[in-house]
Length: 234
Ligand code: SF4
Ligand code: SF4
View 1: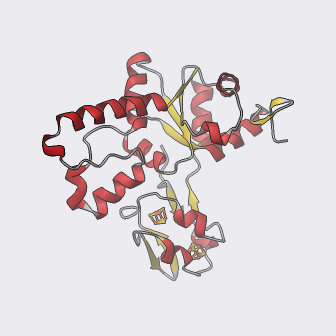
View 2: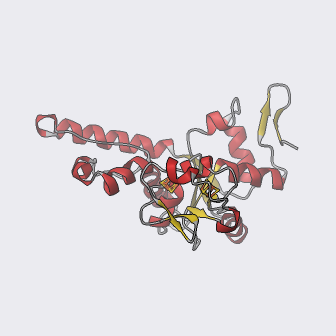
């Protein structure tokens, strides 16, 4: 969707402290022309460098404008919402949140947890059929899967051959809405990478920070108070 990788460097902001180099768990940041730059081929999109950099020189790609353009152009966009909406919007009635998100222009709002259920069932089936309880590694986190595939390839054969929850959910949604573009919203930077890898299924992935910014810009309620219900942060 965007030429930038999900995590990228802004060299002009870099003050060469190399904190990010020290904190990257897979040494995916190298020093080029005195600046610390992310090497996309080595990055597992964990977001550690973004949280570490004191100068906003490591950034998460902002996909908000692209998704807003999509929603402006299409009336059938489906949103897959991460189950962690419950902690991002504590106390909010899910139906109330769904209504608020539809005010942004989404036609349908569904929970990614449906995909997680599909994956759990499939993993349970595989484990039941597994001879001698063969080791199986299963994780909903794309960063963990990426870490194993790139850096611990000897364990890659033990990864369960099932889709991630978001991809399983997209496939289920695709059967129900064959032509509708699908967007994800959740806390995870790694989902942007999954979106890049599966553009045919997942048009884009927003972080909750992007979603909240959109809700505030649109004046759509995004904060819950016990007495007033949903309201904006303004
Ligand atoms: S932590 Fe930030 S300022 Fe320091 S080297 Fe990394 S990108 Fe540059
Ligand atoms: S996102 Fe994670 S893996 Fe990628 S460069 Fe930053 S710290 Fe390293």
